[in-house]
Length: 364
Image 1 (cartoon, rainbow, N blue to C red):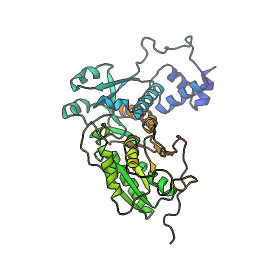
Image 2: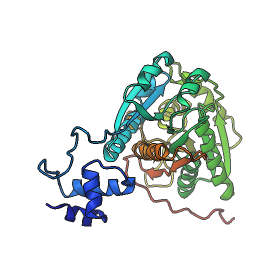
Image 3: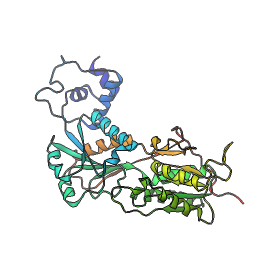
Image 4: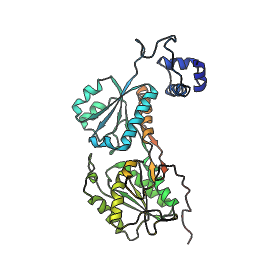
């Protein structure tokens, strides 16, 4: 197969295909992605007998190295979403032809040696807030933060799920199910994306002229989230606050799947029935739950399983690599850039959901 057919498929010139195959400079990321996608789709492997320098040949340009650093407890790496994030970064690095290394940094004193291994051209971050000395060491590097870290990043660009849209989607789902009184339950108000999600949720209820209660637990921990411990009192305390409301909400948005695993059992212990009330076989007098993150392992054993919001973690990783390479190529752009990935609704089996909002206000 000739590179002419690859060029036609990718919508570029034959010379551009040749430059991509031979790792030549001065090829845009968009063109590189298009050529590599065409090569995969057409199952094309460059011949070792082609003219010009070969991939990996002596004197060919070396692929740049980017590093991903995780600061904080190793427990973060066990979350299902973290595995998806790493997959996304790995896919993005492969598609764009860059080397990718990952380090869980337990001791900031090890950073200088980690940064000299490559050498590293740019950094992806997903972590707690680094101390002042660590920040001083990392700030000179092109940096992109991934996901909605506990604290807003103090420097660098960011690629993250859109937390305001997450709250909006949750509100729209519950309104579409006919709920007229909503509530947001959150065990970790110290996590800033959760606070933004609550704003989107509240505004969606406000625009529909519906009641909405925000019930959150104050927390200031920088790393370890204590409600994840075996002590169940935090979930029970939040549910007790819900039950003290003068009018009980019937549509509940719980901040994420990890919290659903704590709060749904707490609701059941308190005698609250759970399940949609507007479908055949629904639960009369019950509450309906929607969650967020699409981390299915946390929902094992729950019955019924809630509807969920997919935040597309893998896409965050892929777009993060693209954003980092752009930042490496544009070091003089002063503006910090935040890229938001829109979430989508899914049912309890992970299938996409289409939401058709009902009338905003019922006619008496």
